[in-house]
Image 1: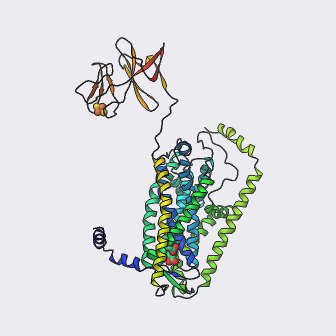
Image 2 (image 1 turned 90 degrees about the vertical axis):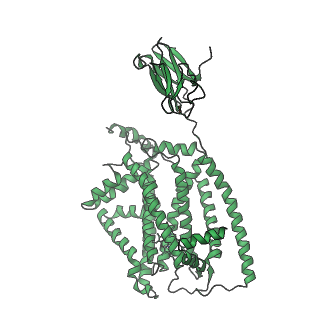
Image 3 (image 1 turned 135 degrees about the vertical axis):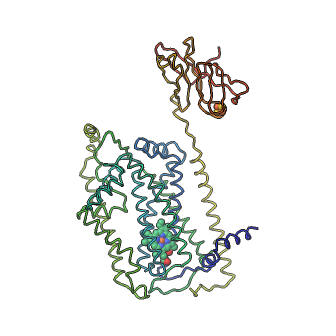
Length: 370
Length: 158
Ligand code: HEM
Ligand code: FES
């Protein structure tokens, strides 16, 4: 009965080739095979984001008046609310980490070569979408850090000639970050971004099932594992380990909630306000070079990075392409150095600002409110 | 990929079986707590602000022209009524049929529910033949001169 039903569905949807391809798929063994796990890990964390995100939606209220209160309620009243929120926040960070590892390993393994160039392109868009999730999600708790980090972030595009102001106000929906901005970020975070990213993840994952994993031009393949069911079983084990670690961290270090930001009673930013770690390299770059230069510089690099599958002719012909490898290594080093530098700078800033001063500020600021 | 690792057929099958069992077991161990946490999380029902059990209404808010007023205590709608003899009474305003909010019709007088034409008499007792099968609950009203305190406790039977 059930097999009947399955085969009917498969033939009705013309999936015979797809099913055959998945059944035939093998995962090659070579020195760098371990990196094949990271896309799957990203997929697992992405799924966790969707599930816990929908759960939080049952209680979260997206207005400047209620956002912070509703999260407080999630954390203190709703059973396991603190855990679901902590998992959503930690898993978001894990997802970003997995994506960065996944992208750079794909880059260094030259996995972007045809026929996987579409995977590279969808991957880049997914990276940008995930960063979009990070940026829009950061404002939702409506605490002080969230407010100021978003203020800074939405100011950056202003450095662009002509379009800058328009882009900045479109993101904010107002002259300055306020309740409209929150609602807008919310719409992006739970509506626009999920729809696009779920579709793209499906495309990306279907493609790898059909195309199979790419092998670096120089790798010596020593064997292969059938994807279904052998490799998949191993993959599930890796997921279980990742999931276990995630839960352990989410329980041991529950995600915190800062003090609510009150629009009617403006305050100065807490010392060392900074975005999430995956934006820190941008944050630090913006501190040391002019904004317009950073925007154009990163814009050009992003275009180059996106077009790599078409620029790297040698790798496409199955040869080594050391120039691209060096470029990837330099990119990784740049990210690491800038991120570390950014954190050191933030630490210095905090050390220079006595904590009492921070706590007094709110009252002074209140007078200039109206 | 023609280089599929060659292994004695029997051995592969055995290993796969063990692995499958292990993964299935671990997945089961993980699933149970996930389902429990999700059920508890989604099963939460707000108790409202239970410290809030009364509300104040000014007598002057109720006029012969507009002799009734809807207020809310702890998420519950309450209807406060000034009767012809200036007596003030308060009833739960949630219709006992399907939960609409009832209104007061001074010209009849009665409580009327627009949703399915339910009716209650001035004492909140459901009128037989209309949809509600239970009466509204009359609440305690404490007269403080110009103000009235409406309490969420049912009025003591006299
Ligand atoms: C939501 C984010 C993402 C998910 C869920 C995801 C998922 C996956 C999965 C499950 C695989 C197969 C396993 C593997 O080879 O690791 C894969 C392969 C691949 N992904 Fe992603 N990925 C994401 C983001 C990215 C990004 C940001 C890039 C790079 C721009 C990228 C580029 C690739 C490439 C080129 C492959 C083929 C790898 C190979 O055949 O060796 N992906 N992805
Ligand atoms: S809900 Fe009032 S009559 Fe049906």
